[in-house]
Image 1 (spheres, rainbow, N blue to C red):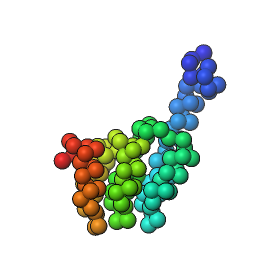
Image 2: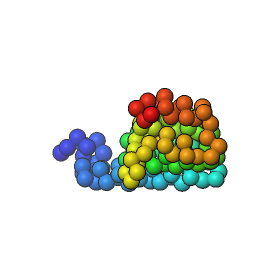
Image 3: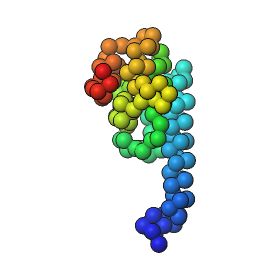
Image 4: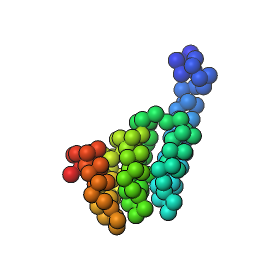
Length: 127
């Protein structure tokens, strides 16, 4: 019996599939929040609490973070909240254009210098 089976009662394959489903569900929920006209730090924190996240959880796709950076309603507190839990998101590139969050932010109306600084500090190699 593997360590996974002993601790969870699931086969390694079942455990992997469960983790992938939860990761996708989390990413999708964050994506919907981050593209919303009602994006807010409170809404993001509710998702974090519901999923009982700790900083830097395993997430396969950071498109939600790039979506937040492209959202004209984003503010500094939202980006800080996302970076608090997903510090790797700032340096993750998208699969199509190979752009990082900084690229998305720079093309966004109403973007602030403070948000740009946060993104550069989080991913200095993105400049």
